[in-house]
Image 1 (tube, rainbow, N blue to C red):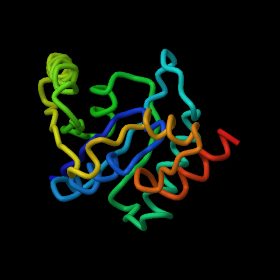
Image 2 (cartoon, rainbow, N blue to C red):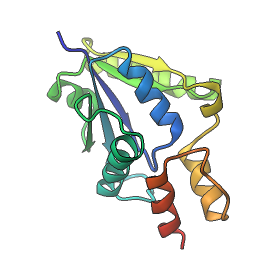
Image 3 (cartoon, helix red, strand yellow):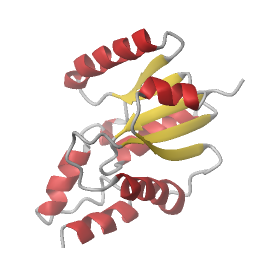
Image 4 (cartoon, rainbow, N blue to C red):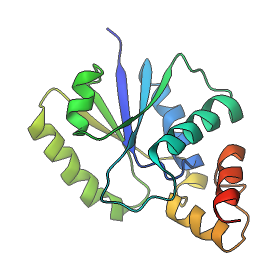
Length: 164
């Protein structure tokens, strides 16, 4: 049986923290679906189609990861429905700090109530990537700082174009 892991998030933009989790998940599952939220309630820097392109460019062009093992999509449904549609039985969530845990714990509980066949798996990125957040990357680039240690070349180029 193929183990498919769904990794939902905003990825606005994708960072090395996200990529670290994808690499770790590939050691556990056979296939990873990076699912980019189209949630209209948030204020995004990049549109959903731009985020899909950025994730694909980061993973496949910049980092030469295997596109046969990773699928990148956007979605605007319940995560549990997306899991069902894609035959994924594991949801991947990242934890950076203790402050993330309470929200993620509640979210995992709600997802479990919605579909008891889906498990949530929490992973932490390596220490050097734990402090990275999309929010900080955007703030640093907006203030003309260097984000080379935090995200891929494709993302840096797109960020510079947004803040030019």
